Image 1 (cartoon, each protein chain N blue to C red):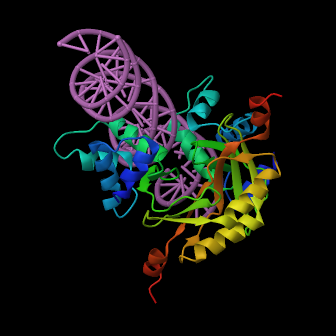
Image 2 (cartoon, rainbow over the protein chains, first blue to last red; image 1 turned 30 degrees about the vertical axis):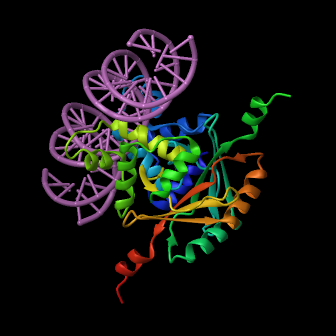
Image 3 (tube, each protein chain N blue to C red; image 1 turned 60 degrees about the horizontal axis):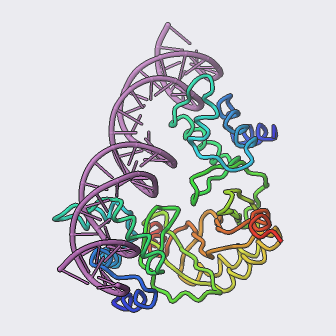
Length: 143
Length: 143
DNA sequence: GTCACTATGTTATGTTGTAACGCTCACGGT
DNA sequence: ACCGTGAGCGTTACAACATAACATAGTGAC
């Protein structure tokens, strides 16, 4: 996880103590966290203002170290090296809130194809899909 | 647009005056509207509380008459007959905020394939893609 | 030393979405 | 006619998510 430092150096952004703490909190959480979850978790001794958390989140997203789940207003650390040609798919479990991050050339291709028909040019190739993860399916239908 | 009435009758939900007004407001708008946009537009004479608008939006979404764009917190009327096997793709223009709705069997298939690898079962097959629409591309790069 | 820049703090506010509860009206049963 | 029930919406208050505006502290260049 300290490979984040390298990425920051490469991009010219600093990995300050606060930014590190946010990153660590997200990495330590088993599920994506909301901004105010972070406010709570970081503010044990000394309260951190929401705006500060949001600023840090912006920087980390910009650096590609974390992702934002728009359908949930939550944030999670990034695990992948993102190859520019692939699409990123977030499999969001409606039941437990967990998110799995996978990449797919195939989806990127069909997305591009579909968009091209209308002249639309996709920017960030990230999509979020609601559904039920394997774990929750098993829990929901005990045999 | 009064084919909405048929859908409602078929589903057993009523198309009340308020619901009709919300639907008409969305249809009349050139772009997707936020819930509070609707509060303003409907409340010319008599103020409608946000909660009422949200309730109506929920019903209309449930009936399949409108969609919600999660990345923008906006709502737009639905144009398509939604075939259950296809995926719905919302092409969201980051520049003008306009949304184009297209369907794709191909994307549905690659989505299912990708998800299957992790045991994830997709629910609603709707994805939102950020990008730039044809109109805004033309406006941005005048030759 | 001073200037510029980056990071963060402080305070307040804007935007989006819900909870809890009550009123009214239409409809069905008796 | 009376009553119960449920759908639809009003009213009030609040929760959750996000940002604006301005101040302060450190760091490095000159």
